[in-house]
Image 1 (cartoon, one colour):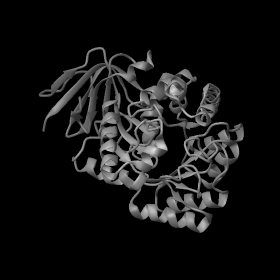
Image 2 (image 1 turned 30 degrees about the vertical axis):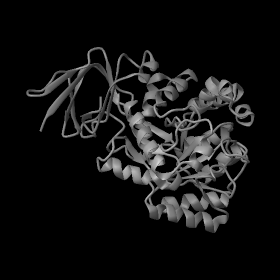
Image 3 (image 1 turned 90 degrees about the vertical axis):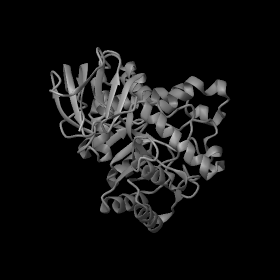
Image 4 (image 1 turned 60 degrees about the horizontal axis):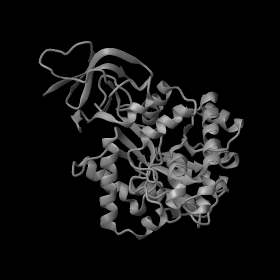
Length: 391
């Protein structure tokens, strides 16, 4: 069995710790130990002044969707073969960016379950995947073009059971409207509390976590009271919501990147007015302020880029991390949110999310120190998955 010693100026362990001028012993796809020098017989790869950290975890992505302007039209019009090919390409881009695990947040035709199986068989190259299949929404609600439309407690319960039967890794549901669905209004209530409670109850009974798409205090609050494990987006909420999130240990996945990409590229691309008005600079500022307050309150944060939304490609997690830092999060905390925080939320922390003996050797190498310049995460120097060098 080959033993490799990955040496660098700095190692960030993903839990907030750091070691200078050390190396990681990798064998059999696992991290064996961290040492100041190579053990006898090990092949040494010296990355010089680089930093090694755990592979990043994207806790919110749409792995089967390209970052095209007309998202709904693409999803509803693409054929099955092209859909799968696009998903594989997106996963390759995701892994190349240093993201070694991703949580998918909704796929047409449950394609994420099929592609996950292909990755695990070694048929295609990609990150690990926590699947979602189709998310749950009300009839005509946000995401209805790929979701399971569910009305009333009984349908919500039955459709959750159907997803669990199919083998999804977690259950996502829409408690409020969103901007990419014509006819849906961001922040408007969609599921009732009773419907939400039925979804969460069924998922938790089966040992699966839930994620809620929600913004606005009433929508987030009903999901929190039902016991959801994470809140996606979570804009425009009050202190009571944040306090409950802290008390319950609920994760926030803030997804600042989509609005930033809208602002950067929307007008010149001819984005529809009804979308740009909701996702312009004022919306981005609202999101930044909401995120800043959550960080100050001590809410648990996991990083998700919402990749697959317009202009927001499958390699954008480092942009999301930079935006979190620009909004007031310390670089060290942003890295924890993007490694250990994501692993804890996804339920894979036993094996991933930190550089510790016995864990899988999913590693990212960057040219410089992200604690001093978070932007170095945007240009990976090397990526390792299960102890194998991807590039």
